[in-house]
Length: 276
Image 1 (tube, helix red, strand yellow):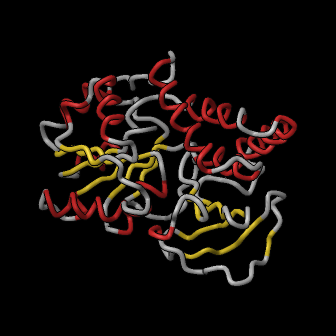
Image 2 (cartoon, one colour):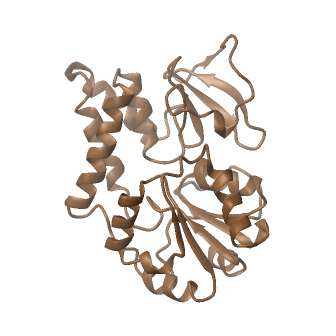
């Protein structure tokens, strides 16, 4: 069904990490790198908390907001842009005085307010909970990205994707919008043999804070209506919710079984590997 939405568009904006290559082993790798930065006597507890997330037993889930100042996990309505409920790590509702009720994506600073949009961010929040600093987490992330390029099995070509994009690029304008910097994005696209299919790469995008800004730029530059643009990505907060707010269609690559919103512009799929 997601191919039908893409076929109806004039412009398709693709995320890069977690979207244009297969596998989620890098999330496990990042988690292990973070665990090595946790105090030794707390590493078992770190793993237990992360396992609770993976098993769906934690208040920490995709679509939540981590409150780094209070070490709490908030529910967030991405369309009303409101914080609706805070929970502690024992999954108990917590009353918070003087907490903001209204929070736009532009308010996320990835320190005090951290959107949990995809698999990179749950281990981030767990690490913060166990005392790992933001700088140490950034070091772990950079270490993981280097390891992904050097080790086998972390950057896997999506079967059929290259041929599909080659044909699609003849009929549609294809753009990459990624939080990776330009050097990293070019390296990944070159490794995946996909770089020639995109007319533009928007690097260091700082999604979701600047997602709407980038999407509006694409709409204006390529002179298309929002409803003729599709956003394809694995991060609900980065690529999906902002696109829906602008009237675009979306393809969310996710393991989530149920859509968080009832909107026929949103299609869920767990892979882009069925192009044959």
